[in-house]
Length: 87
Image (cartoon, rainbow, N blue to C red; front, top):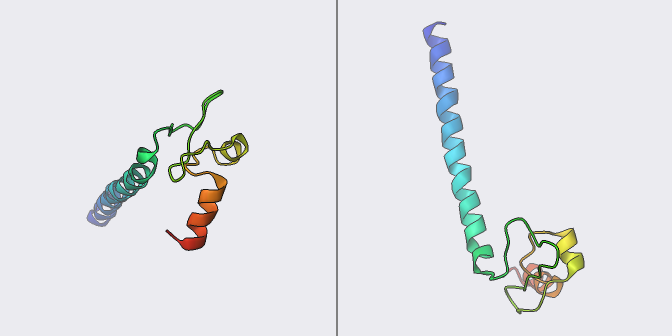
């Protein structure tokens, strides 16, 4: 292995470390934002018999919504409103 190969290997290693740190921070920021405010949030989704409440209106999130979007934190109506207004 010559100097160029070592330099390329070193560069790739540091690029991978940097990308892992970058994306780990993004994931933590995303998960820590609204989901942590939701008292019924469970990171793996709702289990059998488990109900979650919408973080905006407090109403129970329907079973069909949780089946379609297991990590949903809003009911259908509040999610539509959020997407419509961009808030």
